[in-house]
Length: 260
Ligand SMILES: [Zn+2]
Image (cartoon, rainbow, N blue to C red; front, side):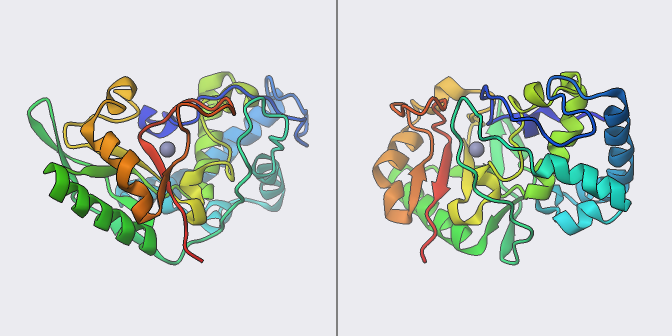
């Protein structure tokens, strides 16, 4: 199974785990029986993943949907991945929690950017309603000031989707949990799956983003505008340049501070 590269950015951090309660607790390389279990589980996921991918709503996959096609023992096995203990991270990423569902997601469709002279429509994205409202207001204000706006390249990604992504990505990293975790956030550790701190990865109208042009994003006038004005719309930069927690600078990744 190929995991498109677009889904596996944003968490290139080095860290290690305490031993998970798998049949063979080897985070460096899963045992052959465990590899087999992973493959069988991915086969069982295939229909729901295919259907959601076709409908462009994979990012809002729920844990209930993910677990539904599994046997009881497969569910227990998968739970091990959901519960992987990342307390021994050498880069401290706070555990934000697994969110089973979010009733208030809105779908953002038809965002158009122009890359190398050609218009591209971004795949549909999802955001909690209040986050989308504030983001739209913020971009309207930016448009007024700069004559341009940023677009949502990646918004809400459910914990279930993150869990699926992690499992599907193991194959690309020699079935090493430790290696995979450098590239794919574990469920519960991504601000993209945490509505109270909902993250957005922005892309500008020319396609400059964190994935392909990380060094260009920080010199954009749109970025300077955000630094000055985002707080007025309850958005904050999650991983600033001068942070001393070891997390890489991500000028495109901003999170919403939910109003209680
Ligand atoms: Zn991000």
